[in-house]
Image (cartoon, helix red, strand yellow):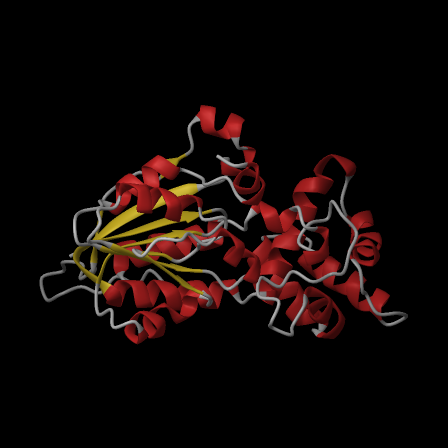
Length: 304
């Protein structure tokens, strides 16, 4: 593995996820989170010459990792537009869809992008640098109630109201522009021993809001359900409980809310059959090698 690849994003649960895709000859496959290309390269390695892989990523940095292979098509787009782009390429149905919902470690390590509280830089957090809306816009313009909801829903933070109130008070005297500005305001709310964990949740909440990750995930999962052929596999790696709940609901009931539709006899009308009833997690060895895999959960379902 090249250093560049290693620094970009070490693919999590690589073997388990590719095995879950159940590759076969003449297949059409989609990797909706190309990133450093780790999963895509392994899919191409295991794929036969008659198969094709479409990989999506909205981040221009990901284009540096594109593979030169006639069996491969890179789509520079948010995965929420999965359905439209596949139709554009004349694809009606696919054999497997893989999504690794972790933010590339490359983003965390790039101080310019403002994803991490380890660096000072602009409070940005956009995955797609073409979109205009940043984390600074969120903390400076959202009203207190809306901010509190974001921290509570997306960060699962118990002190979300206090956070929102402190931010609202601070910005009235001067705008919050950098990560440093933001940390000076919120850090006093967290005890030393839990500071890192809690700050990670605050940053996660802002990132999800800036990139509209939950809406995008919902649209992608709906499109995936429609595009997969019978026997096709949906393979998803999640990193926090909100995402995982949405994926689990979709696989078990066919909708994000988890409302099971039943037929006249009380049988659940779900579009998927679960391949692994128990969620797959990284081995101790993988967690040691790649600490970011610690919170990863892999779910695999097959279209009925």
